[in-house]
Image (cartoon, rainbow, N blue to C red; front, side, top):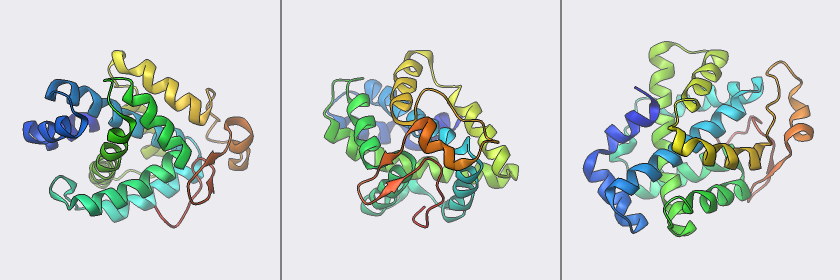
Length: 206
């Protein structure tokens, strides 16, 4: 079962109905949009984890999401955590670009996507933290796990997600063995709303 499958199972029919209400669409479309959101977040984490520093930072951050149940968490708390996660993965401007791109999938408003994405991000972190604990993943194994996960995205969504990620990270992934400070040259820096964040940079707000 993929992380996205686990996410959808955790949400259940009632959760997808709430997502549909948030987006102003039907549950079937809400399911597809949720898949796309999850796939983009997982893909962004995978891009960050291609660099050793990024994988180490993510693995460390997962400690704060062990043994949590985001599916029954407080919305305000989830949203705050989610914005922090998205800011680290995509940067502020990158998060807005993702929301705008994904909103075209179901003709929903980017503002609605900006409400959904911060709720999904902590759910993904919690599920990933549980998997890392059960499988005793180190940083390299975590990077491999994320790389596998992003390859499981349905073909109908893969092109959209890949295009969005390439626009933020660049189309050519840097080798994991390369010096991390070259990431800004090969893939560009992302502007966050509070500060500049390079892909995979270990920051204390994870």
